[in-house]
Image (cartoon, rainbow, N blue to C red; front, side):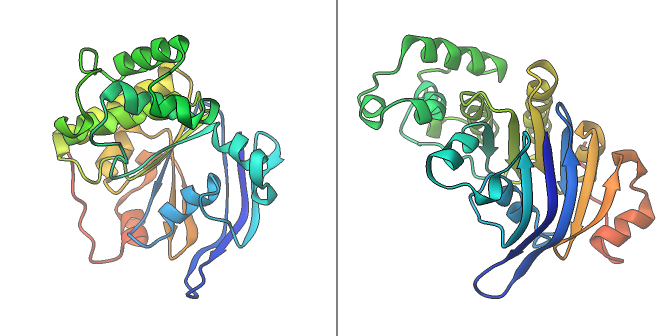
Length: 252
């Protein structure tokens, strides 16, 4: 489904964030990207969905290199790649239903969305996704009245409104407490297994990685240094990825 080839990203300030990263993602995988802060994880996801333009290399999505696309063609690609952010990025004063419906903006005029004139079929679909993430009954609650975990689940439902082939999750549980982290990860896994959506997720905690990932890649200093199964990351690999003085923190 996705082929990343020799991806390079150099920012205007000279920071070399990605240094020749290459890997494949198969349809239906739950791929987790790990590494220290600043290792290039967020840059990688933003290059995949073209929020950032790679300096060089290729990102082949469903057989097409999307690094050269512009205008309407890149917007079409983005509509098939959902994105979930660490800080939710919801509209605080709008209801859960409206926030979820905003995921279909690519096919709804701005004026109609402002006036709340959503197609009935979109409303039905939005309520189905709200049910999938366990928020039935909260459709008319304002987003800023929800807990952090609930807000992140709204963000998942919003991303699903795009009918994405791939769902990118950039540190989706970094702002949440341990119990809530598992709740959000369980819903991401549900989307992956029941809806067949391929997931690429950046995470810090190996305990979560081992429980939810089907495969892992690790970045260090912008380079890919590990690719394999979660349970194959032993103490030696942990030290290699995170440093000799690093201590693993477990989320139960």
